[in-house]
Structure formats: C-alpha cells, structure tokens
Image (tube, rainbow, N blue to C red; front, side, top):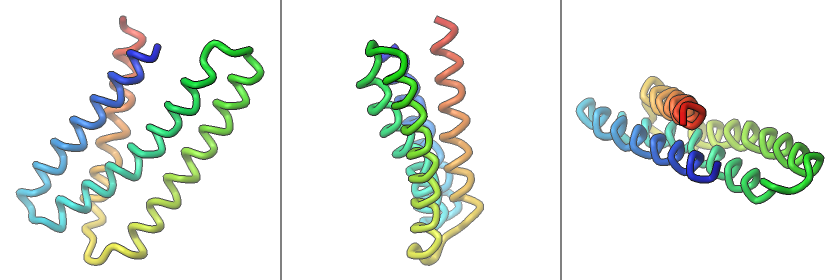
Amino acid sequence: MLKGSLKSLRIQSLVAFALVLVSLLAGPVAAYSSLFGSLAVYLPGLLFTVMVMRKLGSDSTTFLRTAVLAEFGKLTLTAVLCAVVFIWVKPLAPGFFFLGMIGVLVAGWIGLALLFQE
C-alpha cells in the first residue's frame, strides 16, 4: 500500500512539473500560477498520505478516525492555500492556477487507479 501511495505521489509530481514546463510557453506568470495550483493540491494530499499511512495496521476505529480527520484537514488546507494564493500572489493567471490544480488532482486519480490495478 505504501509503495502504491508513493507511486501516486510521484505521478502527481511529474504531472505538476510537466504542466509548469508547458505553461512556461505562455509566460512566467502562467508557469508560477500553474505551480501554485499544483502545490495547492499536492501538499494537502501529501500530508493526508503521511497521516493515514502512519495509522495503517492499527485497529479499524483509530484508522477510520484518522482518515476522516485527515480528509477534513486536506480539504481545509486546500481551501486555505487557494485563498492565500489568490490574496497575496499578484499577478496571477487564474486559468493556469486551476489547470495546475485539476492536472494534479486527475494525476492522483490515475495513480489511485494504477494502485488498484496491481
């Protein structure tokens, strides 16, 4: 399970890097906007993975409680990071910001699908 989670995070990292490089063709503002969008999804997902993997193998009640709290924390942190970027990063290309977010989110789903295929 840990190996699959690391594979998913690796796929997300590669997609984020590729999106930044492609966005660089549109300019530096697009590139860093895409990077911030990618990080707004990647960092909360990374923290979720760390929190849940620490409780893997413990009793089911503890694991479920940790998973629920980690998911709530992930959603909250994503919202806070989005707000911080939109408030303090000027200029920002919102389309590229959301491109980075959606790209990393979809890459996470693909990584999860590959995990269950093995």
